Length: 397
Image (spheres, rainbow, N blue to C red):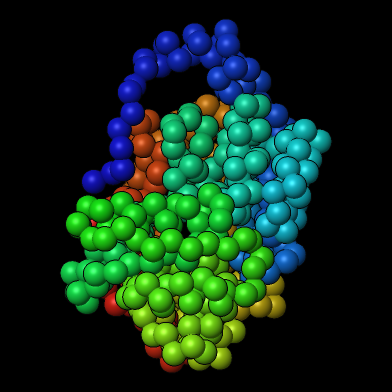
């Protein structure tokens, strides 16, 4: 079951409108970033600051995919050039990075740009210029809805992840009181809305809400509120430092609810950096974290290649970047030599049941549906046990 259907307009009507009103509807009549010998793509990533633990491996994964495509001769006779700018996970820096990529570097597409708040700044600018915004590394609903011909999402939405998680814990653990600790921005609100929607659907009391500003390090008041109101399940709209910090605060005051974090916090660093503080934490995701000793021969070979290229171990974030660029490269190939943004969009729409080597949820797109995974049925619940995340169950709602 895919997420939604949209009202279709005939291709002829769309083409006519595009030709006359290209600027207003965001479909370019001529495409930038396309040269005889190369295609220039752009991305903004938090290469500095606390979210660099996402941004650096995502960038490495994207660069590895680009290198592999170019090593095979590129796409329809063109090499791919990838330009990455540092956003530091700050909206003002993302705006500067986006403007450089779109107006100075004149990129053909923004691919795998990371972060909900940062994409909320750059994505509208790209679409207004007729530039594709594809597979941003965020699971916010805004990345694929409302529908736009040139934007595509690649991750099970945070809201759907949380709805499935809440249903699982209510059905299997008898949870009745739910709270949400969330970053006070579009990312955190996606997590919040999923929990609220599922609690309401199951006839539970109104969720307890408490938030924090990006970069916060003190969660004492928020955790105290959740404890005082008797919350049994805490849904976390956090990433890495905030996940560890909030759980450490809870342990310090003897508060022991079930904690579950979205895919933004389902990363190996929430184990390796936590020194035991996140033991028992649950997380939702659509792809298993790659542990070398448990990997298939094909994934081991990929991890060896990654380590040889970057002198670092591959992590889940590396897969997110690699997969985004691999799928986009496949769409570029399908679109042929004479490409435009709209032709590449149609090529993405033709992708059906794409399955990566890592065991993640398959991708399918259509002219009506620009979200790759099946939103309601593509999440898996994992739990921190010792030094690893271990699979608990597939979850849905």
